[in-house]
Image (tube, rainbow, N blue to C red; front, side, top):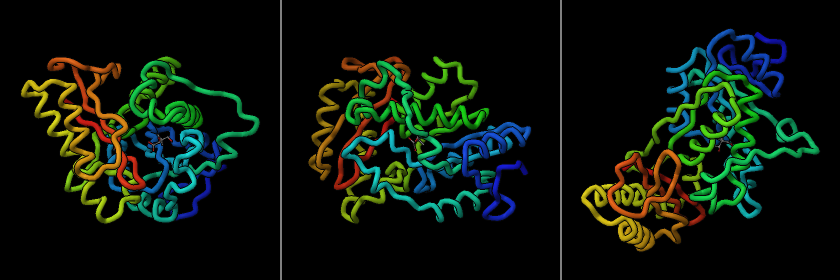
Length: 289
Ligand code: PAF
């Protein structure tokens, strides 16, 4: 075991409390290492990322850090679910080798003056409706990549724009890591798994699967030749009829560069993207056309 690592659970999962501990642990493994960054409040979707990571590497390191820089001033940073003891038990039960748990002070030593900004593809979707969010994600993920020196990193496709942003800065900045997207893990009724689903009341939880059903209907209609603008407007109205308070966006975009597609049947890889508010939750999802 490396000098700065501390085993607090049992012999199977290392707890890495600092950037130095993470770096030393990864260096000491002499193996291919996968990093799975998370903000905790783990669910089966996160476990599917851990399992996918095991397919790509010998050692799987998860991180849990509720990153303040990716939350806006009126967003749910304070309320974001923190379930650290359950998370540790779940990761350990699923054979994760190490868990990185940095503090805010270690991640953002004061005075902190650096930003990472990815242009163009952050001006739409969640980058538009949550100003500064994608910058915060880019900053923390860059730091996690540099701190760990991991060989591969895995992210869910539910946050598809986030995945595009991460791929872009990895390429632009020559960060030596392979970024792998993992298909969205869904509940039996189709609702994309998310830590924020726990904000839903019982009634809202019944309404929530309408989001995925609507995406499926949009895909079917477009494939049958329906017009994009009309279909998106219909889908948006349908969500509000079913009980969603508002729709931040419901759009079809080129999945490579996130350019908006407004006409005709897309012959390029495209996705329909949605973000909509239901009670306290802002739910996002997307589906390939
Ligand atoms: O997707 C998330 O959980 C977060 O945005 C991430 C990638 C862990 C960065 O904080």
